[in-house]
Length: 371
Image (cartoon, rainbow, N blue to C red; front, side):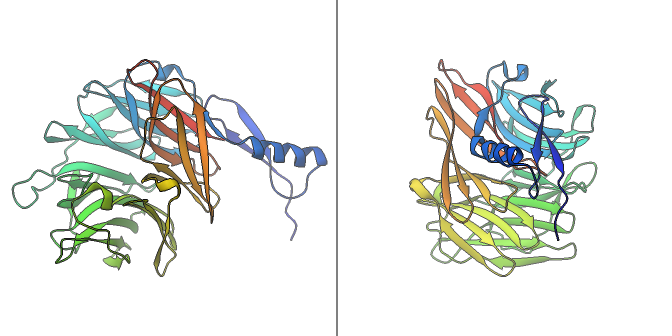
């Protein structure tokens, strides 16, 4: 059946410009050429914004839609909060002193931020008008070790989950937390007490994934995942032995559920690996160039963007998987550049990343967009 020719309006993150993109199907020769030219011109670009004219860095981003996104970073000891309203990035007032470890949003009027205030938990909630401090009372791990907020994820239906752990970067004891509408509370997952959860992804209240590793008798890290279907948790093992437990190189650094039969994960070990769940089994493909994968984002086309561990080069570098690997560079800069998180804009083929650059030695926040 032939499709009707339509026009899709998409918003450019760098400003409020609406770009008309011809849909696939019938079109004039000029439209076809314009589409091919636009596709060829797609690249990672710098985003200019008054909200970025400040020091520090941006460390985490969550994109809800074309008209809503949140980013968080730090400047000195103070958290830096930005919000995308569909036209521009806006700096939000913040007097909170903590190091952010994550941000997630269910919509423009519901978002969460977590972090560390010394050796204590810090958690904020956005109600559409302002950020408010909320309780994050995770139980002490092993009865004595404070569990600190490490990762966070949320879905459009308001479901939000967070991982609290002793050390989010190289394993260790951990627990899962859930937002109950007023505060963060512990969730019981049927896992061994020595499990190290390091990644979480939420599609809805009835579709939650967590992943990490469990040490075996030889203290090697064995990868594992659990899935919540709204009624119970199901353990889904991942093949492989990731090496000696308790090191940064054998951690699941990110997890991304994009469908009932499509879940992605990253393994940071040696060259690293991209893992995919197809509804029946996990499979892995190594990442190129000997880089360690760090963060994941969908691409809106069935593939994924992978952000390597930042090296401080003058150009950002992104890996794209579409059945084969492609390496894509970002805009050149005058100083060391460190992209540290990225996300996909639902309903588009755009992706957005955040990080910092240091043209004169001191870090400055940056945002880049693939369009």
